[in-house]
Length: 238
Image 1: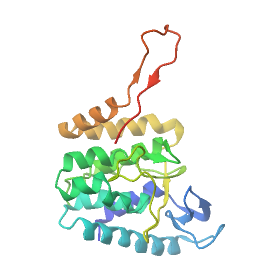
Image 2: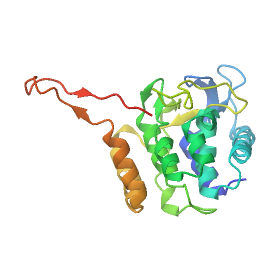
Image 3: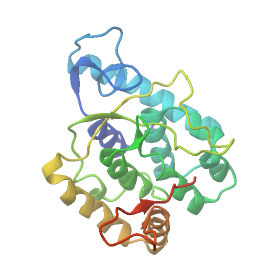
Image 4: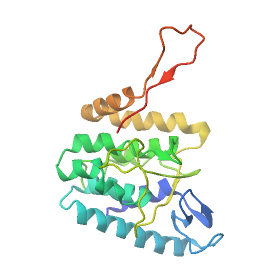
């Protein structure tokens, strides 16, 4: 089982809801686990039981497809599995993990940031936190967890424009896809992002990876258009 700090971080990402809510893929309550029916209400004790069962399934899946990972990498992939399902294992991310190419794995991991086909700020922030767990020991540095909080429900989905090894739709699996909560309220989003980027700058490899990732989606301008024209955006490939 994962270190309690990682488990607490996943719970904070998910947030707690006593009453079931629709989250793009299912009705979820507790800490983002599948509800038994729409509108179901559970208490925190039941939420804890369901969370433990679901996160154990996710961790066992990671152990099965990627045995021998360090604790931090396992925690990051367990959190992704809990949040978005198991399809990553049959995608480019799974291939990179299997080949031991952790730099590529980190880059692809950051692309799991969409809900309903659109990039979601909360998922961007969540992935930025989780990607720093790669290569960590049993417990990540405490400042990795200090800024986590929950607010708005969003559901993660597979990256778009995927190759055959990176399916663009979520597969149905025994491990539940779950509700994702934004890491901060809208008014505090910039502060949370700043803390996440500050963590990344301490690792030159991660920083270079992130810069390259962001550079793919920079807007371009048609030279024949005047200054008032709106910029075009290149499509981002996976």
